[in-house]
Figure 1 (cartoon, rainbow, N blue to C red):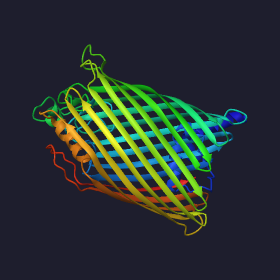
Figure 2: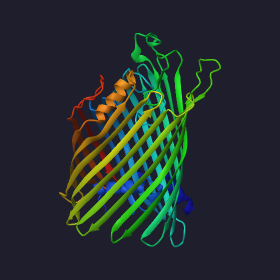
Figure 3: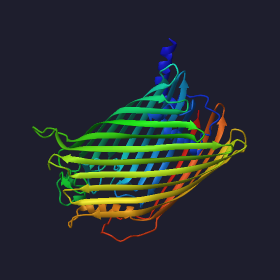
Figure 4: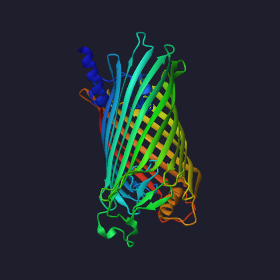
Length: 519
């Protein structure tokens, strides 16, 4: 009976970890920048969760965030509002270490044009677009749970399992009207082995399934098949430039679906020694997506057919290191991602679209303690990012490479026992390394207003500054907090280039307010 109750507790905590944890570890400063880096590195993947070195932690936070401004990508909203609730936590239940997280976001986006796909950062080809701008409403859920347990008497072997589920539904209420739905499911199993008391290696394998569907229709008869309202015409983007007219919101509903399956594998090495805690992990992921034209219910003998098959391969690696000596610590985190995608277009009987993304980032951090209390943290961060999109049929190619740098300082006041006031400031910059867009002589609306506009965005220098204030205080058995922050970005170099009426502006901002508890 005791074992049955343990299993029930494990499952419940994996789904609702943050609200079940009670007395958290008192030796850890959960507000620190270093803790957030470390918890993210170890707790978000099954292969590293058992190495977390944490037995009881939970956070519950709800908030409001708003962003806006004209310095943006062509398919991004002019203004966005988010209301969110998120939780995360880890708890030791007998020999089982259980971690979980849950979040929900309600988002509204204003004035989004040139895309009828909500997730514009998605690399998969074949999506609907229209010139007409509209407002999106979206709801997104993220849920993850994982558990690890020693499976040998000497605890040299540790097994783990995890699941991640994401679901999103988004729609527009003006013509053309897309209804967009997607879900993502990943299950993982892992096995770690202690080489020595201080060194651990591990492997992980997983299965991925991802589906997406977009249904687009135009209800106003005046906009259907009319040359007087070209902005309402619905186009199918095959890649990055080759578009096909699907009618000006014709009487039938236009529908497209993506069905993806794939697998992932990872490895990890972790050591705790005189050099500190050092961990490095890396992996490979392969995802194959069938892009399907859905049959129209209004047309006789219409059946599903395959537009294209898109293959995406991802390599990634990341590391974490921390060394603490007396009243100070040094920490370092770094990450590398490489994605390569290409499609096989069924109508063209060959490859039309090629995509690649590469990113490398690094962040060193220093922290100082006074009277066993964290006093301040200083960190630097930098990254280099490269993106390529090429469309063979349209003879169009865009490549952007840029660098970002930043510096952060956080200071902690301890006015009385259990009370902490944190002030954080950050300054950063983005600068282009290379930005190019090669297009045919006759450029269509997508090329002029998306490809050309994004060229200017990536080819301009910008600087940003942000401030965040947090006050943490006890209420009975829990620690509550109030947090507020804001950021302002300005672009200051105006480059010459191809003509577009959709050139990005010079500023972008966001502000955020939230409340929460550490349980």
